[in-house]
Image (cartoon, rainbow, N blue to C red; front, side):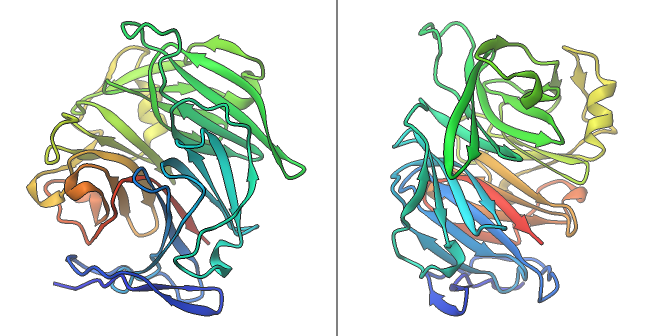
Length: 342
């Protein structure tokens, strides 16, 4: 057993302290010392940005920063500008914060860029070039018996977020993920995943749209989180939203070819296609977001229900089963993740 202490992050040239946790077990994964590997997390409970240095999972360091939000869901980090962007559920806008790694842990970051407050119930943020795409799960037509959602498309140019257009989907939304120019979207309240081919180029005006394809993922009760890297897709399963112990996630290698082989409206079988991680040892109840380190075969999860919120990591996930996390850090209200590596 290895004890992983979460006790501070080296930000720029300054070492800063943060709260500690040491309830982790498993093996360490080390990325080369001169590389970067950071996990950015948002929270529903306070809107803070928490940054984990995950180059060495036996010696993770962390720091948290206040923001103008008290509730945030959806996060992205731009390494070229050292800028983190959140979708604010309290402010109903996109907020960007610069010089994150030059800041002192515990301070309140100042928003350097904000969109107009046009969002309603943002759940995830995906970025493709200068386009920042937000999945919003608010009821569009006011009828809870009809499934619908919105996707807000912002363009970041000349130091501004401008709402380019908004599209309405014929299903409720949660997680979204770009794979190239195709946007994959979780169909909330189901075990389905949909894709919009060439999303930003095809959908340039306000409109009601339907996905290019929608399929069911066998073995999942209700999916929320979605993440892709190097051809492998991670999908989380929150199960019964009222339970903090019945969650899991699926690992699907060669995802695009497997997705393409399933006809529209049909099901991707578990056997021969998917690996499921679930069980009492996982600490998974409502895993709402995921990120995947394909180089080291590590899945990171934002767990919302268990203990009020955790950030978890799992090594050797291709083995599947009831895996104990190699990193288990309590983070109240954990809602979204973004993994930055270079």
